View 1 (spheres, rainbow, N blue to C red):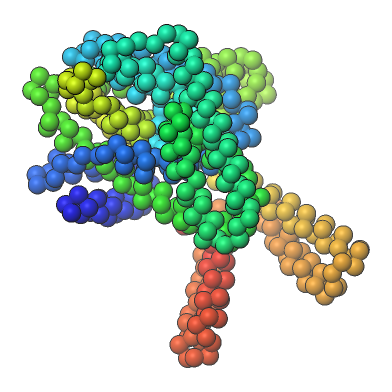
View 2: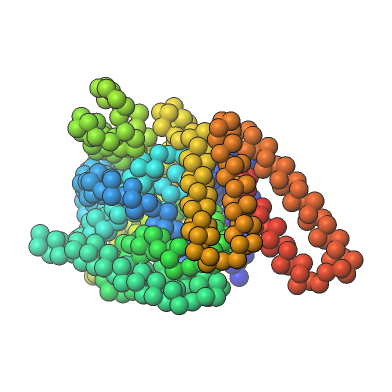
Amino acid sequence: MRSVETVLLLVAVATVVAAFANRLAIPAPSLLVAAGVVAGLLPGVPDVRISPEVISLVVLPPLLYASGEELSVRDLRAVWRPVAILAVGLVLVSAFAVALVAAAMTPLRPALAFVLGAILASTDPVAVTALARRLFLPPRMQTLVQAESLFNDATSLLLFKVAISVAVAGGAMSAGHITLEFVKLAGGGAGLGAAVAAAARLVRRRVEDPLVDTVISLVTPYAAYVIGEALGTSGVTAVVVAAVILGTQATKVTNSHTRIQRHAVYETLIFLLESTVFGLIGLELPALVRDLPSRDQRWVLPVLAITATLVATRFLGVFPLSAAAQLRGGARLGRKAGPGEQRLSFRVPVVISWSGTRGVVPLAAALSIPLTADNGNPLPDRGLLLVLVIGTVVITLLVQGFTLAPMVKWAGVAVTPGALHQEDTTARIQLAQAALARLEELADSDAAPPAVIERLRSEYDTRLAYTADAADLGETPAIVTAYRLMRRDLIEIEQGELDQLHAAGTITDRTRRKLQRMLDLEDLTLGGE
């Protein structure tokens, strides 16, 4: 019961902290980790022990699925080469670099040092997506950092399996066995993810109930992960591939009512899971440190050295890729070179390098390390390894998390609100023009009553005129905000009138709910805060 009470309290605290993070315009994951560490240091706070099953089976699949759905396939095609290099080459280099540092600065045996390197070598998709969501990075840059974090799992997981087999069983793998394992993890996971996506798409196309469709979409990531792990492939890769495929099919397998309801459910679920897991990461670190023997209490300096090694190897991996892309005269990582521009820019690779945080996936891998070796003896230094992993995760989330937004601002790579507004306005105009062209076709073929066509034409003409005038006048974000506030004020007036009609018995409860939903949808289309 105490564990249940602790989790409920953590959810409540995490919700409050996340609300303050939004108000203060700072990344919620970083603030949640900081709050967790502070809470863990307070006297009387019970030690928190995170079960690996909770992270792997409950938390990880939906968070990975949400990250994969946000990935732009169009932009992924443009950056697949650097993504592949970073997801394989950089992971290998980072794993060996961390292993060397850990072996030199800690009591870890070389085999366990390599386990540590394999765990921390890959960037974390949950943390990267959570931090990048509010930065307004250029589309290709956002896709690059997210795709790298999503697809480097196969490489990291392979290294982890090899290292664990050596550390726990004292065995070794041949080059052929390693290659076969990589194909099994990466190819098998991708194939399974595609199969799960095809099955989910087939079922969802025949489902019209929004509630049932939402349940299917919630079950899909868990099914992909559990089946993947049971078959010995990468469950993480299966979830990511299924999410990417289904993300491109959303408008073809669901209707607007379903998408609105599903979006609301997923936003709530992701908020709760992210808030809880990042708080748990910070909360568990003090408890693990207290369990360390006295000889391992000097863990801070190794953690700092390991973190610095990860950052340095990432800089050394990203900068040559960016320089090569610029020297070829093609697109940079994140934006295109200007006409006649010759100087190499270092601002974009700095942002990409600094965005490689660690988080939930390394935590899940570290917690899955067996307590004993195959001979039945306790696995030595497992507690120290956990402290090094979680300590590194905490530092990257705090340091990189709190400084990434200022760095993006310094680099000048963020998409401006004016550019976003112009893109939105142009798209709205083209949508209205397409609808009007279709109405003209219907009018010429007498496919609909003239009164209906005229009414719809009037509505689209009004929308097009407003949007075009706003574009011609150079409508600024300030004007958009003023319009949104005034429109919401009018919706509140309508809301008050609706409540009075219902209270007076003029309309039934059924009519009130119908009109309430109409007002809610109108408010939803306004967007903003």
